[in-house]
Figure 1: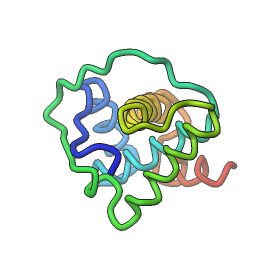
Figure 2 (figure 1 turned 30 degrees about the horizontal axis):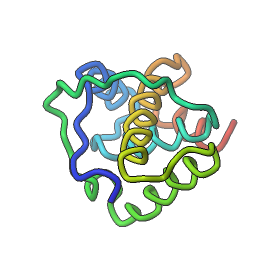
Figure 3 (figure 1 turned 180 degrees about the horizontal axis):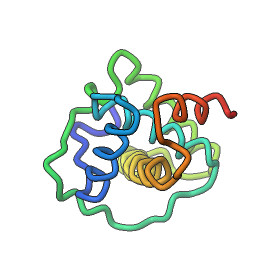
Figure 4 (figure 1 turned 90 degrees about the vertical axis):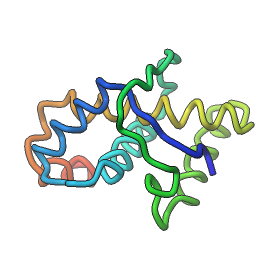
Length: 126
């Protein structure tokens, strides 16, 4: 397990709320999965900034990952290895959170996503 609990910043919660409205996806964890994977696909280091986990949006690791939680853990560990970063538990947790926050910002910041179809097109690279 990468982290026990995931708590997002207020800004990320607001961004996710807007994405929920645009896409019709009702569950926070589904959008968070998209955001995490989208950030990983960038293949660059997310900016190492402190994350102000000040919202009331909180979920467990198993809520985030569901039946695929082991896969998400392997993705972040593999990314750290590929980037030449340590794979200790603190570093894995740090970069997971940084990717999640960055991914949410990326998805919300693109004026491309106006519907679920736009999100799906982004996922298949159209």
